[in-house]
Structures are given as structure tokens and as C-alpha cells.
Length: 315
Length: 301
Image (cartoon, rainbow over all chains, first blue to last red; front, side, top):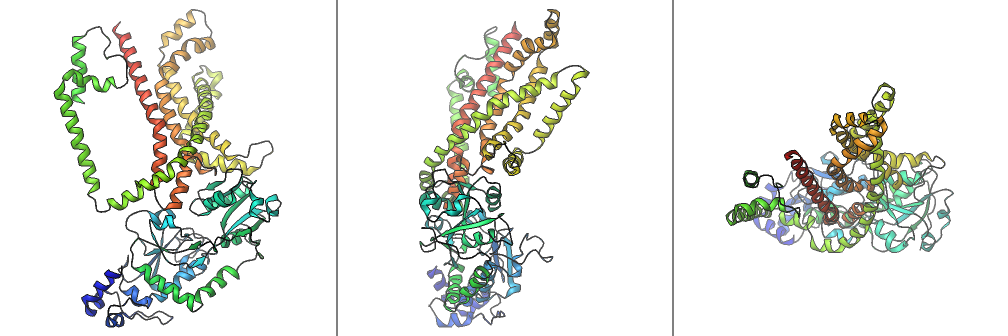
């Protein structure tokens, strides 16, 4: 990574400028590409995300291609369907609404891509880690980091430290649980693709064998049909499912949350292994953490938009 | 192929009246032509196998992305870590299969008999059997599994089981009995009309003719294709994973695949299915060969 960058710099600022796509990029936030400046400072890694991104070969030259799943669920994507992009069901990511859409556009802007140079493409979960070239520069779809997964893809730094939570329905005795030990006798499920299955097996250790559904919509259907007592999902999703105005889970209740964020679980964007863009995105995320932008986006989309009260912590 | 066919003709000419093929092990049909034509044939066969395999392995391994694909699909470490758990869950696949099989056999036979009933009185039954078979053979099994597995428990009908595993197995029974009914029907229709005529002339009624003359001959004749369908059923127990959360082998493989971002667990599941399906398939081959020997021996009389 480092060596490749040094090699590029050594070839000279001229060639660098020639290779870079449209080096004078100005987003609405005023992040201008500073490619020439980086070349002049010599053999130091760029600290400006836009300068960093200008040196990276993108999937589609000149635009930042971001992958996410379709349909994309709230609160990560919001804004509904649009006539402009009918291929996106449920929520059109181009609206920039929803937590992940907002984070993605903010990162893009700091990388030097204004809104009309961001392209969204469908990245089904399984394909984000399949070997081979990808149709996107990075994927953002609530993918939790784990050391096992890190063997196959590269993760960005955290854009959200995530707690897992337990969703059930009113009247089910599991809603009276106040500790993890209280959950052992119930039928609990999650969905494939989350890290929750390991969490249920290893931490909750239910007496009834826990299950995993193929999709979130299947977990919801199973909960609504009373086939399981509760499902484990990430906290923002739990708050959305149990939202009394959404009724995605009928009479849904968030029983409690688990302190998985404190144990190091976080969402990261995923990259093909060795993609140098990862370092540029990390620079952007570091800036966003330092100046409070990330916290502001979190507050706007994850804290203020919920109609569920305080969620107790289960230990 | 040409040399194998030639070998059989050759032997048939030299051993008139004898059974066409050596008795015993299922492998004898593959090896017999080689023995007959001697060491040279064996050498050619071995050489050609080695050349073909080498070319295959070489052409795959020289592709630029092979190391990445190997790590993602044929990863020894991931295999060792996930195989034991997947193998344990395979017990569930065997259980689904064992429970579904007797019901499929019974329901399919009933359908085939319904369809074979003669006379205008039984037209409604025949029509029902035809519609049933057309319907369940015409739609993908996974859809039946999905519709019953999620649909019926959601109805919340009193007294109706809510366990999706129950309904997934019911879906397998419904779908497979349509296929198996056609196999039975082919068997029933293959029984020569003279058999029925003979039974009727001996004073057996229609039902007794069917029960004691037609069905026993038909079923014996279709055992190989029946087993064929059960090899397929064994594989399709993986479809249960679409609606049942509690993991069987395939779902466990999917869980591990997503947890590790590696596809090797699917390979581990595939291996478990092969452990069951390959011996079953070889048994079917052997049964078909035996059936053919019997028929040919009968024809020689």
C-alpha cells in the first residue's frame, strides 16, 4: 500500500496529475482536490482525503461508485422510492436520506465527489465478499467487522459502533426479562449475515436451539407468526421494527440491548482486499469524527428519528 | 464408449446363452470391458484419465484469480473449523428425508391408482389426480416450501401445527408425490394388458387384479427410478432451510459462510450430501443393471 503510493509519487507530479481524474473537483462543501499539492510535498502519505482519493483508480473513472443492498431499510436508508431511480425499491439511496446514505455522501464529499458524481449500485450481501472484481468502490450495508471476515475483505474504520438488541412482541413473557440469564428458555432467532447468531449461541446460550432466517423480512414474518419468541438485530433496526408508527413488527417491543459495541462490534464499509481507497475513506471518517459531523449524522438519523423510549441494557 | 459396446458384443458372441454380464459387484460393468481387452486398454484408459485430469487442473490453476478463488472456496482452515458442526446438523436432513419418504410413497401410489381407475364413474378421481400432478410438478418445490412454511403457520388456525419444519416436510411430500406418482403410473402402464386379461379370466375383480397382479409387477419394475427420486429428495431437504430457522447442514453452512466471508462451509455441506447420495446412486445403477440382466435373460427364453 505504502510502497505503491511512494512509487506513484516518484514518477512525478506531472504524470500524477495526468493519471488523476479531473483533479480540480469542487464539492458543495468546498472540499477541493489537492492532487498537485500532495505531489509537491513528496514522499509523505496524504492527509487530505480528496488528495488521497485522486490517486486511486476507481471502478468507474471520475465517479465514486457505492454499493448497497436493494431494498435498503430504514433507518439506514430513507426517503422512499423515486421516479428518477425506479430500480431502487423501498428507499432510493440517491436521496441521501437515512444514516448510511448520509454518511456515504459526506464521505464522498470529503473524497472530492460532489453529489452528482456519486453512483449507487446494488451490492447483494453475499457478493460483497465473493472473490473477484467488484462493480463498486466500497459497500456500505451494516456489515459488522469481525477478525474472521477481515481475512476476506478490507474494512474501513467504524462509522457506527453497534449494539445488538432483542425484539419481541407485547404479551410474550420474554419481554419481562431483565438479564441475559432470563432469556435462556426462549426460542430466539436472527438472520444469516449478521454476527448475532454467534452472539446468541455463545452469550445467551439458549436451552432451545436458536435459529437463523435467510433475510430480515423472514425474521419479521416469523416473529409476527409467533414461530419465535424474539429476534436479535442491531439496535437501530430494532428501534425501527418496534416503532409504533411503523408496525413492521406488530406490537413490537425492544426488550433490551446488549453491550456489543463496548466489546468492539462496529459497522465498516467493505473494500476489495488491498484497495488503496480504504485509507482515503479512513481519513475522511477521522475528519468526520474530529469535527463532530459523524455524531451529528448519527443524532439526526438514529437518535432523533426513533419513537421508542430508552432501551434497557441486558447483562 | 465404442470400445465398451464392442466388448459386450464380443462376449455375447462367445458365450451364447450365458448371462450377458459377470455377476456381483456394481463395478464389474465398468471394469469388465477392460479385462476383456487386456492390459493395453487399461493403459490407454489410465493414460487418458491422467491427461484429462492434468489438463483440467492445469487450466484452472493457471487462471490469474485461482489463488483468491482457492482461498474463498477450498480453504483448508475454514473447512476444518466448520465441517464438524455442519456434519452434526446433517442429522436433521436425514430426519426430514426419513419422515417424508414413507408419506411420499403412500400418497404417490394412491395418486397413481386414482389415475389408473377405468370407467366413466371414476372420472372425477382421475381428473383430480391429473390436476394435482400437473400443479405440483409445475411449480418449483422451493415455492411450495415457502408458501406452506410461512403461510400456514401465519394463519394461526387452532389445532393446526405452527412448526414451520412440519409444513416444510409437508411441502416436500406434496411436491415429490407428484413426481413419484408419475413413476408409479409408468410402471402400471408397462404391465402388459394380457396380464389384466388373464387375471380377469381367472375371475379376479378389477380391484383384486390391480392389487394382486398389476401393482406388484409395476412397483418392482419402477424401484430404480423411485430410488432416483429419493436421491433428489435427499438433496432437496436443504430447501427446508428456507423456512426453518433451526439450522440443518445447508443453513449451518450459510451461517458460517456469512460469519467468515468464506464459501468453504458450503463445500463442507456438499460433502455431507455426497456421502449419502453417491452410495444411493450407485445402488440405483446396480439395481437397473440387475433389472436389465433379468429382462434380457427372460427375453432369451
